[in-house]
Length: 331
Ligand code: TXA
Ligand code: MG
Image (cartoon, rainbow, N blue to C red; front, top):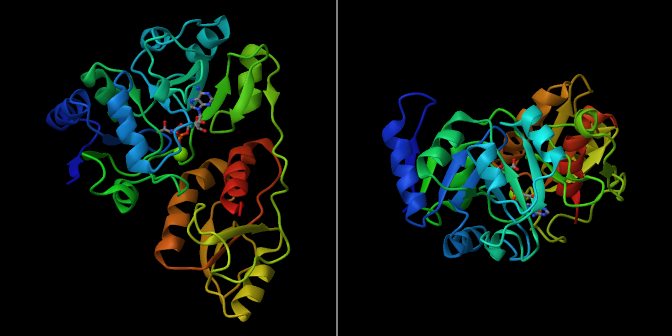
C-alpha cells in the first residue's frame, strides 16, 4: 500500500513527521521538489537505496542525486569541496542545480553507481527542505517514475507509475519548474555540463568561467515518419513514439490521414492540424518547461500512438527542453 500524505507548505507538520519517520525506517517516500517529484530514501542506507532501484526498475549503474537541507550537509558528503562549488551553491541554492563532487567513503556505492563521485543538491521546494530537515538525513532521490518513463510533476503522475511499489507520496500539488535539475560535474579539471536544466550554462559561466558542454550528437528533428505504430520498442518516454518537426501541423495531418492516432504539442501560434489531438503550449520557455511533462502524460493517458512536437527554437533558453525532447524521441 502506498500512503497518500496531502501536504501544503504550511500546517503540514504531522504529515512531514510521518514521511520523515518512513525515511528513517528505511522506506521510500515520493516528494515534490521545484523541478519534478523525487523518490526519496535514506542516502546513507544502501538497502533503502536499493529499494529505489527495485521500485523504478532502474539500471544499477545509474547514480542518484543526494538531496540535502544545507550546504554544510552537502560538504559532509564530499571528499573535496572546490571553491567553484561554494560559489555556485551560494548563487543557485536552494535551487535546480546538482553539483557532482568526489565522494567521501561513507556514501554507499549504490548511490554513486559504483563511481568515485556523488551528485548533491539543495532543493528549493519548501516541503522538500522540511522533509529532509525533519528526517535529519541526506535523501537519495531520482525522479519518482519507472525507469525510462516521463518524470512526474504531480502526485497523480507518481501514483500512476509507482502505486504499491513505494511507501508514501507527499502530495504538494504540481511542481513549478517542470524539468529536472541542471547537472554539473565539478570533479573534472574544467567543470562539465552533464545534463542541461533550469539553470542555464551562461548563468553558470558568469560565476565560474568557461565550462565544457557536451554537444548532443543526434539532430532533434526527424522529418521521415517513424515506422508504423507497434513496430518499435515502447520503453522510452513517453509511451507513444515522439518526434519533433519544424512544420508539425503538416506531419500531424499526414500521420492522422494514415489512420494513426496522433497527439501534438502546438508551439504558441503555429497552425493547427484539426485531425490531431492538440495541446497548446506556451511560446515562452519557462512556462513551456513547467507544462511539458504534464502535457505528455495527458497525451499518453488519451492513448495516442504518436506525438508530434513543434520544434522549439535553437537558443539557450530552450536548451533543456530540446534535450528532453531529443531523449524522448530516441528509438
Ligand atoms: O531535478 C532533479 O534533478 C530531480 C529531482 C528529484 O531532484 N532528480 C532527478 O534524478 O532528475 P534522476 O535520477 O532522474 O536524474 C539524475 C541524473 C542522472 O542523469 C544521473 O546519471 C546524474 O543525474 N547523476 C547523479 N549522480 C551523478 C554522479 N555522481 N555522476 C554523474 N552523474 C550523476
Ligand atoms: Mg529520471
